Image (cartoon, rainbow, N blue to C red; front, side):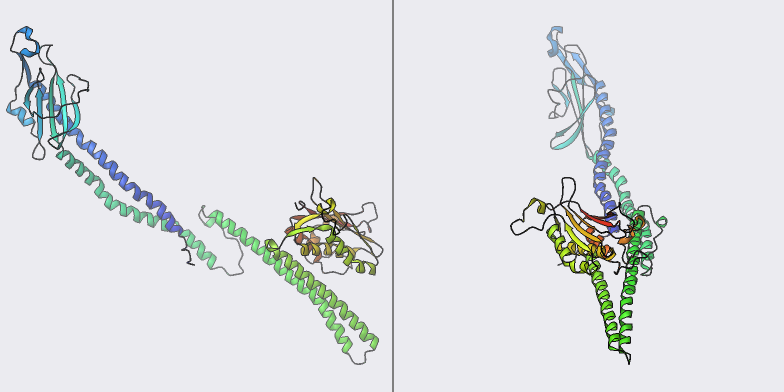
Amino acid sequence: MFRREQRSLFGDILDWMLTPLLLLWPVSLILTWWVAEGVANKPFDRALEFNVQVMSQLVNVQRIGPANSGAQGLRTTVNFPATARELLRAGDADFVYYQVLGARGEFVVGERDFPLPLEEEKIELSTPKLRDDVLRGEALRVAYMWVQSGPAAAKPILIQVGETREKRATLATDIIKGVMLPQFITLPLAVLLVWFALARGIRPLGALERRIRERQPDDVRPIDASEVPIEVSPLVVSFNELLQRQKTATDAQKRFLADAAHQLKTPLAGMRMQAELALRPGQSQQDVQLSLRQVARASKAASHTVNQLLALARSELAGDAVSREAVSLAPLVVNVVRDSVDRAMEKPIDLGYDGPEAPSAGAQNSVAHLGSVVHGNATLLTELVRNLVDNALAYTPAGGIVTARVLPATDTQGPQIHVEDTGPGISLANREVVFEPFFRVLGNEAEGSGLGLSIVREIANLHEATVEIETAHPERDLQSQGTRFIVKFLRAAG
């Protein structure tokens, strides 16, 4: 597969700034041409209107017949001296055409084939008007006017003056050149200035990149957000938060490794010492057997610590990758209790289970069983329950009671797992810190690595469950009030 080219922030901003500028330039050219034509037409239009008005003063209507002959007895004449003809000269570039229609609608003077105004047009006397027209294939700008001259019976006289458009086009082109030619210089200059300003504007990003690159790998100090532009400040703040989380995770990892090394160092040192004692010359068979039992005990403790470290690491790394299925809590808890009976009998401790019965082959769909089904990973949930039961057995004195309980889901809450004991309990001050790795309650000689409850919380978080601690038997004396761990699932599997 081809690697996708990396986007450039500089290029994107430059494109968004220059593209509208380059697109608007043709639009500006069109608008300028339209305005230039309007500007070029105005002086020539006024000249045409002036010529029409001058010609209207040269027209005369005379009666040549009886008074009762009406319009037929009228004659229209135009006194057209040389000075008037000079006014109609438009120069070498354009031609001027004119026409006068008399009081009887007859042709008087000018061009016979001069186009007439539209018939449906309303006649307004002594008011010059303008229109565009064509004569003999040439485009004309025409000024025309109706005038009333002579007897009332006479028709209005039509006077028209038309001029070709060459000078108008030349003037409009000159205006366009005068406006647009400087833009051919200013537009590249504007592009250059935009590029320079943008390059200067993103320079702080380069400085920020160099500051980060020059840092040592172990330097997790926050970056001063006041030294960067305000637009980049949210990015720097987010990066600082990431650094803080990384620092917290690194510190936790260092503490974990240090505590793990310490926890493993003690049983390993004990095994080495007992092995050296057993190898000394002159040791009796009884002393050798005692040393071997101590080695076996230390080996068992080290093996338990390693297994719990692996379980904690597995639960922390599982995340979304863990496989999930419908898991019934009742048989899972029952199996853990059965596996822990031998250890409970060694103290002895009364270990029991309370809740829905584990479904038999013919009762898989019982209501009580379905109410204790959650969507999760059976192996991790078994590890969660085993650590709670092991913790209760470790801290409950001989003759105590440990009970594992499953509460099916109700209309208002999801299924729950309870593990309670009759030990000394956990003070309110310690109920949060007991979930930290390797934490041990002071003054307690119970065996363990201090990892069990950390594993419980990690697995519960993976299953969107919560772990709460409360006093199991508040009515008893302080040494036997016990502790109840409650694992609450949000909902049962549908």
